[in-house]
Image (cartoon, rainbow, N blue to C red; front, side):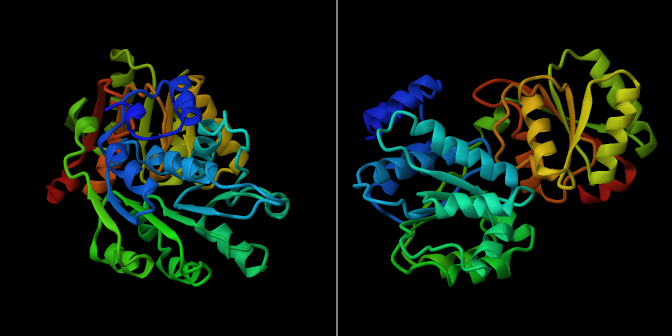
Length: 357
C-alpha cells in the first residue's frame, strides 16, 4: 500500500515523496489510520519495521488540524531509551513537517548536551518534546516543564527502556502526565514486566502485533563462525580484506573493547571508530554522521547503536560478542538488509558460547 492511501494530508505526502517514502510497511498501514482516529495503540514490531513514521506522521497530521494561537504549548511527548534515537525521532518530526505553514517546534531533551539551552528552548515555547528518561526527570524536578496540555504520549522501544532499568523512572513520569491523552506504545517484545507498565499507561489500547515482520531478516545472509577469543580479531581483519563490504557495524560487549579494537584496527590502516555511551554527545553525533556519510568504514559499537537507528547501506553486521537475548540479536542484525536490500550478519562463537544453544 502507498502512503497516498493512508489519509495523510498533501503537505506530509509531499515530504514523504521528497524523502523517497512510497510504499508503507505493515506497521504503518495498521497504526497510522488508528492514530488518526485518536485510538490508544500498543504495537509490537521489530527494528527496521518503520514504526517511527507510524506515529510521527499521524501526530503531525492531527497537530496540523489545530489552530495555533500564542506561545506553543507541549502537546506531544516522545520517550526513547537512547539519545541517538531521540535525535532521530526529532529529525523525523522536522523533516516530515517541512511543508507545513505552521511548523511544529521540536525540542530534544537528552543528556550530554546543555541543560540550560534545552530549558531555554522549552521556555520559548514548543509543541513536541522528544526525550530520554533521565534528562526529562531532571527537568521535571526543576519544575521547568509544563505537561498539562499534553495530548500525545509515545513510548518508543519500551522494552529497551525497561532493560536499561528505567521502570521506576517511568512510573514516576506517569504521575506528571494528564489523564486525558492519547497513548502510543511501541516495543519489540512484551514480557510481563512490559505488560505491567502498559497497564498503567492505558487500559483501552488496540493491540497491533506484527508477529511475522521478518522481511528484514529474510534479506540477511546469516552465518556463524566458531573461533577462539584470541583469534577473533585476526579473523575479522581477514573477513574484511576478503569481502567487498562497504560499511561494517561490529557489536562488542563493552565500551573498553570498542575503543581498544578500533585503535588496533586503525594501526593496521583500517578506517575504524568506536561508538558507545561514554563518548561526549558531540562526539557521538559526529561519529554517527561520519558513518552515515561513509567517512567511516568500520564502526565498533555497544548495543546502544542497535535500537532504531536508520543507517542506510550497512553491508555487514558482525557479532564480535554475542548479545544476551534473542531480541537483541534481531535488533543488531536489523541494521543491515534494510529497505529490501541484502546484507550479511556474522556471529563469532567460542566454545564457551555453545552452552547457550
